[in-house]
Length: 271
Image (cartoon, rainbow, N blue to C red):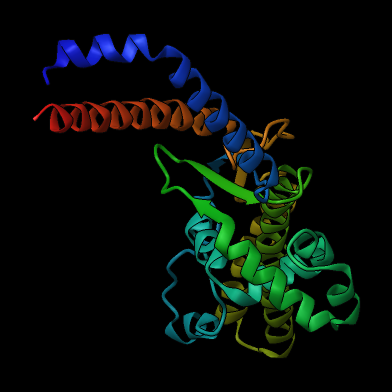
């Protein structure tokens, strides 16, 4: 059997092909409507620069410099933020703030949710979050974060809130550290009798105060949102278009297999 003969037989069997196609389309539509739906949103963020933060002038007083060995200074805020995304403690703190019930709805039945304590809800929500979030490596300081969820209004809302929470979390951390440093400097200044040391403390205090003001005034402390995550009207899984394409290809393949088998049987009957 050559390809030309097979093509002719295929055209002649158009009724059989249409029958298979209708059945395949019906099954694909049934599957796409019965399988668990999933919706995906993405957010584009830009890493803001904070190179003016966390920089202390080198002083000629080693004993004074040692006073700051216990205080963290973070220059690369965005790198720190990406590390936080990998931290279970941070993500669970976000989930607690966001509401674990929102995340577990659609994955757990109402009875299980009702009978679970808050820690169990947070733990379940954390598993759902980390299994469905994807952070694309930064390119030209721009980063895409995608999140999928079974509830339609969750993906875009969660991504926008996550960036807002991250900015606020790191900003408050740095404000708190600077305030602790200023309090410590003030206490040392009050107890020191050395003029040179007091001058050094005074200069460091001014730098800390300047840094505090810069942090406080920065609206987008770590990330600026270039493209907000938006509400998704269409589900991303199951994809009905892909299901229909597969059904069409399956119909063609099944029809060809039937024709080949029929042709072989006809040849065997003749022999």
